[in-house]
Image (tube, rainbow, N blue to C red; front, side):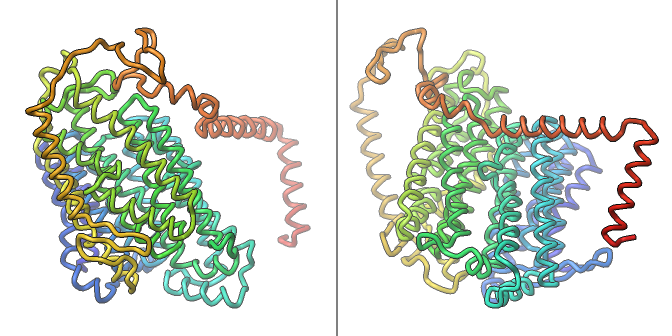
Length: 613
């Protein structure tokens, strides 16, 4: 079998073997091996893929599925594979079911297939395989949330099918190369109308927006992410959401020229890209505000996951080479820091059985390694150097400024500020302060789970201190110097970032601060109400602490907006649809044979007038 196919189907086969051989340790070993094979094959192909594409075709049931490993697909596949290995190590500690291994690894193969497919047939099949695996993982734990995920995924799937059908009807092709050439030619000829082009774009926007979790199609994500095995959620959030992002990149590749000529330009920006930029900006702000207000760790990071993907969409929407570089860099940084967060969350839940801030505290002493991993994730997500999260957000900000999009740049800053607000609360409320007495016997996370964390923590540090390793790859991918500098220094038209210098300065400054704290700091205890909130004393009745109601004033300030919810809107729409369907059913399926004969007569008459009969 071709090595590319070994990489693609290894997780799937391992999942079935782990399910069949349902013995403790054996299923975990099989699962970890199956999840590790893809990264080994991708490493083997690295030197080849940087100079030429690797292609392979597979005939199944009369259909020929094409696969290609290019610099772009290699990049996405590597990210998914890194997160997949970390997921497998995490599940070795948190999952005791062969069911989980089966469907987690099915979705792993589905994600890889989406990235490697070179035609719409394979793309759609693996898209559905990916969705099926993740749906089954949610279904096991929460039927209501799985139904929400299922309905939106079905909407996305049918939207994709209709879009593919229109493309096939207009171009007569399904493979990406032929479709790209045909649509590029049509950009000059104009046989596909503006309305048809806008329809295809809208359908793909729905499809990929659902999977990426973009507002307002994000409502499935908070429940699906939080009501799951948190080790699998590391993959769900860190890798599977990138299938939606990859879809938007693919949209640029296949339809960019046609969308430009059909939809035109607004305010010196491509209309189709401008729409995507604002979807990303709104997603960043809305999801970040909602994350700040959460009292449950899982919900906080679920909304955070949605918001961070918004940065990626924002970068793609900027539509410049620098915007793409920032977006693709954030694909990597988000995958590694958010997956790390979910593994840390898995460790907290595994050892304490608790998820709410008010029930936690003082765990740094009991779980020092997990705390260190969580601190790395906090710094990266908040965009604090020298972590990978800072480098990617810095590039996104530079891209927005260079493209003269100040409001979009403002969304980046606001989102980063809100991210800092909620991760600081996570840092203090979970790890510092007084520890509840029922947590005195908490132990460090199991070794496999810690290994998974380390796998994700290392690239956060490496690509933060040496971001040029990533941007240098992008320059080769784009065939041009999009971001200058070297391994440690990034240079754009509007600024320079020296990661190594910043790292040295931070280490020096923190060392001095540590010495002052150890040898010069004086501490004193104060009553809990010896503080002020907006100039007013805090009473026992209005007690705000890091663990409970800390951002209650913000929730009160946003009270008007919080009355409105996309969740409630969709639920009302679903109820109206259900009521209408019941009305139709009661009206048409009334058990009256005479009515049925009239229905048949009317249908035959319509077909006759239409010329079918």
